[in-house]
Length: 268
Image (spheres, rainbow, N blue to C red):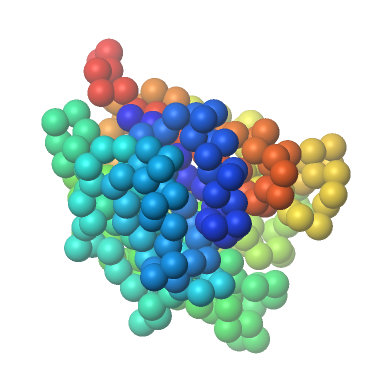
């Protein structure tokens, strides 16, 4: 089972890149964030033509939006929620069968939080902290036995998830309050699959700013995108991959796709 997560930064704009990614990676399920398309305009026919007839989506005009497309049958879960009393299309949950069991897949797009890491003067940052607190409390009580959580969580929690730990401690996405809150969410019952494969002392990024034209040379990246699994799925964990080369494609997203591969027949 190959699951990709990608902040595509406009689905309709980057449909050609999605097609290229499918040819490159051949995933079973793709979770997209920042689709930026209202539901009536979702390009369902185009997605089906790419070989993904099973589709779930929540979208809005110009902002946010999440979708999950699959080669295999999926069922939209009643665990899909709106957070912080806002219908801003940041979460979608589906069910699928894996290794003879029902597995829940959560696709998240966490608020970015603006530029100023002070909730007293920046309502976007306050929203982000409230969002993290609410999802953490919810998962404490509602985490399913077999669960996967993926998405753009807009936080790089570890020292080597950013190009400079010291310089980014006061920059939104790597401040202590954010990293602590994300860790608390992870510890509701998940394992960080990316760091299960790649040691925590190795640099690992999934996002490079548009502001830096020579992004690859400077390599000032952050790991804002995540793949989490419950311990029940750890025996099936095969590999994780970051498709860094996609950042060099024409008109790319500032995020790159990340792959979680689970093997239904693990050697235990």
